[in-house]
Figure 1 (spheres, one colour):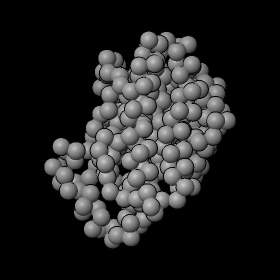
Figure 2 (cartoon, helix red, strand yellow):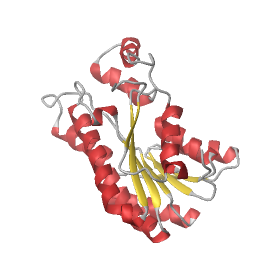
Figure 3 (cartoon, helix red, strand yellow):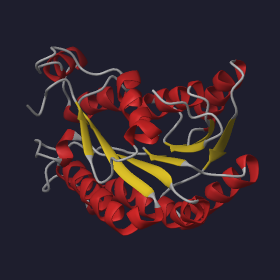
Length: 253
């Protein structure tokens, strides 16, 4: 894996789960990392963990569904690190319900966090990357962005949008040497996965057992998704753009 020494990365939803694991992996590869999240306590803990090993990190408390917050975190990252090479749009939520049981407010919130945030972050990050000669943007999609899933209408719609938005941005910004890809995880051992069981009113043990029903007979670890993001972020993926990289233990297969 190529080094990211001298690079600066920004990770949304970076305080826990896949975001936390990726922030740590980026820092271990040598990047300075700005961590964006609504949870200041957990975000500060990730920064402390990175800095304890000699890395550079910054926590920024922000709501990435708000344009002003997105513009602010891009500016703060530039002020601290003087560059932005990698953007990992990872902030996301899930509502487990069909269209009948999903409220309008829930629909709007899922679409705002999962899709609008990517639009807003890229709106302010792309010009910075273009002026610097290029960069890498990675969005968190899902296996359910490539196929349907039960009782997750708003989530499936949002992740399908992420996959195709990724392709559209790859086309638009490739001439500026900006690569745009998405990683599509399967069920991964995060707080959000366990929260799904609660939403469905299902016992956590049985829900997790179902999540492990795939060829590798287990659900994923956040660190495994982070390695896929690390690949897409670095020079090893220099000719990869517009791709949806599935990391799901064979679930879609």
